[in-house]
Length: 168
Image 1 (tube, rainbow, N blue to C red):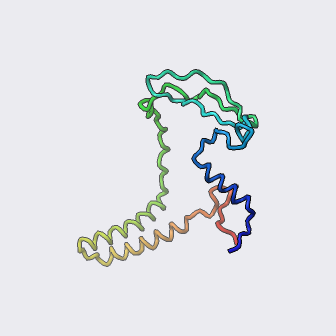
Image 2: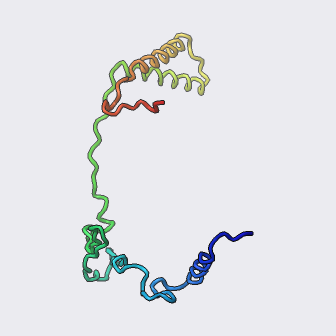
Image 3: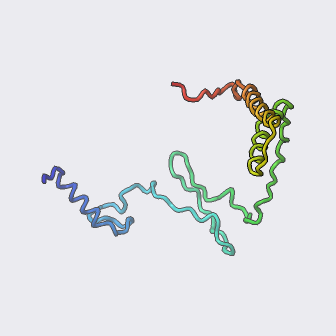
């Protein structure tokens, strides 16, 4: 098996593996610097904005600049004395009234759903449906389907964004 990697890659990897358990803040062997990165990139953990009950909050720390004009603020605008028991006081607005169906649409739905309901009920009970009622159910079902399909709106709900589906 040929080794086409340079020897220094293997040595660097061996150094990384050997230093796996060492403290990252400790200086590495042979390094002149204490840290391999600039101090401006050090991240300081902000204080817990919600201290446990009974403990006084920690003293305010100064704002920490993190670069690019961003600042980690030690003051939390949402840090209030609210508890979970204070939650739940939101009362949603009442819903709008249910729209009324036009008489023709109501009759179409009754024809479709009513004929199916009567047929299922008659089957479960073992009732033989008279011919005249069976004819009315078939006419009501087919007529209801035709009316419902004919009344489908062909206009888009939002004219600015018509939904034509995938266009190939």
